[in-house]
Length: 90
Image (cartoon, rainbow, N blue to C red; front, top):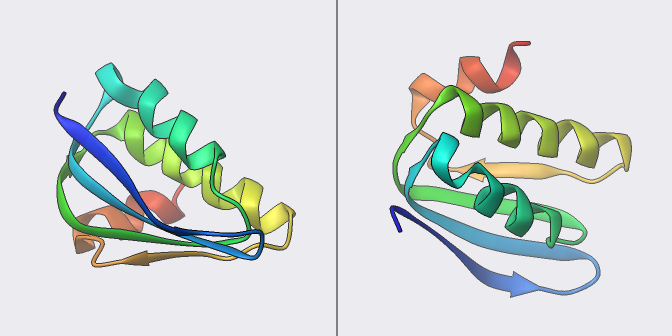
């Protein structure tokens, strides 16, 4: 697999996970499945991400928007700058 998702901390109020590798169309299901399992406010460490394609960025955007509707915060740590604009756009 070209990607890994490692849960670092999890309880009812907050979760933290590290994303590693390349996230793209081929493993979108994997990313979405694991994001859906995170509870509370979420910290996603992207330090070891090699790349996101547009499908993976869209999955992250949907996750962040869904969390905001539920009054939860999603924080991205070490997200490469080239993805910030894509996460904010529609």
